[in-house]
Image (cartoon, rainbow, N blue to C red; front, side, top):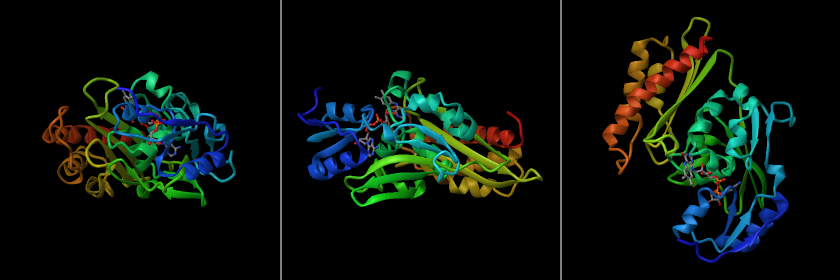
Length: 297
Ligand SMILES: Cc1cc2nc3c(=O)[nH]c(=O)nc-3n(C[C@H](O)[C@H](O)[C@H](O)COP(=O)(O)OP(=O)(O)OC[C@H]3O[C@@H](n4cnc5c(N)ncnc54)[C@H](O)[C@@H]3O)c2cc1C
């Protein structure tokens, strides 16, 4: 199908983009990589009257380390940074290995060459990898709108099914990922029907071990098992304060599958199958993250 008619505007600064969005009102939509917006327009699920192309906004592109901007702890990624640039970044591999491990799971190389970090976070697909990664890493989203700049903790940004805390005419400008404490390991696991398909289930694990080898903090987040990225709080409570033994890992994975998720049933998988996948890949992710936290690869 072809999209409904729309006007196309291409501002050359973030402030101009925000003014244009405000002037055009409800019918205007930002266009980033177009990898979600254009298909939904072609299916006529989205009917924006005006597309405001962010492609010229170089100020929204790039990956910076802590210190480079003067105000950022860890890593800052501009909203218009493409998935492929994140995937290939040595800084991301070093500072946010969980993000680096998740990137190749997003769609196919052609889509990663166009799709952007800000586009994925604004779109908030419950089956997307980046929202679950940002939740696990306790990231902060940077936003700019007619009222100025603000930051939102990622756990408050995703508000439900394809919904976020973005205000009207506001843009995602970037995402800030805090540095991982020492003694921390991370792991990403996903099962999809074919490589490149959206996940049937995906999981991120971030495990910190203290000097005695006990888990001092843990984050387990999941994708494709709820209305948005899901924080597996019961599993975290089961795992925290224990050594990462086979028994602790098994109990945490069981808790995630039984209590933390409300998986959908669709043409790709039943809810029961998604629960079983959850049991298996939460255990794998916790085991790998704990091993990495202890210094192993
Ligand atoms: C075949 C196919 C398979 C895919 N598989 C996966 C997958 O496995 N995992 C996955 O995560 N994604 C997948 N995607 C989606 C892909 O990752 C998209 O790139 C991403 O979801 C949206 O990024 P975009 O830059 O293309 O955004 P767009 O499509 O341009 O925009 C998406 C939405 O975000 C808004 N928006 C964009 N940028 C901003 C901004 N800076 N501020 C405010 N609002 C903004 C737009 O108005 C629109 O509503 C797939 C896409 C396709 C076509």
